Length: 279
Ligand code: PLP
Image (cartoon, rainbow, N blue to C red; front, side, top):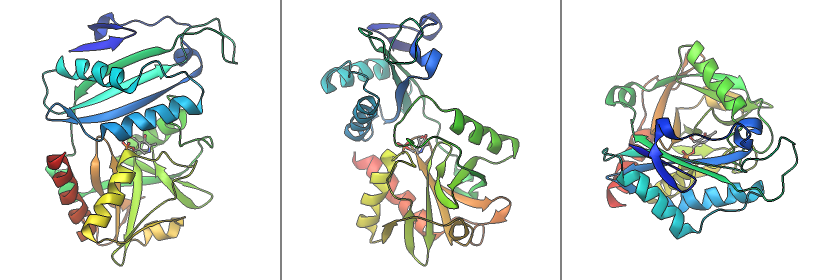
């Protein structure tokens, strides 16, 4: 499999960036993770729109038009043998003498790679995953898909050390999101997710869940969700590009609902698979 770096397709082991790249020095860049099913991008338009918003938010000039981006991504996908893949793409501000403020006349670094998409196993979907909770200690621009991921890294490491799969974060006692996923709760047949504000990354699956709920006749509320509500929910579930939608069976060792995947999860998972097949 080949990767794309600044205009060239090369082997991953040959792809090198200068040490003064601001992605390396400052975490000054943004990224996307895009699922590929049957060699085709899923929700391409939405992922590219979010990339453009992220670039805009930190004033990195967009190095390519949409068409050119799509061609570059297709080049990397076509060079990989797997039918289902996850594309990772990153844009940093570029290479410049070290100094915090934006350098002048710097060219963004563009990197695209792909890997096989490994979805949650049937067993995980039948049993659900264990999660732990943690105070959200990240900055206040979580809506930007920034490569500065230290807060998310520490949250994910906490889950790993706890023998859990994901960390669910709370800020001032209210649900924000996972270390790399959006979080949903179901109570009495109604699904709720936190508001789409600066405290969470609006997953591309956030919009998909809105559509699937409308399709399936499930009421969906976007609102502040208190910590106690999560523990008292009938169902909790996570969404992300690589997890699709997975049920949460326990939080901090306490079972969610009856500890097994519930009907809203099952309905949405089925609708998700249908949306993939129809795309
Ligand atoms: N929130 C965070 C912090 C993430 O890293 C991710 C992506 O993995 C998501 C939410 C879900 O976003 P998406 O549905 O676009 O994968």
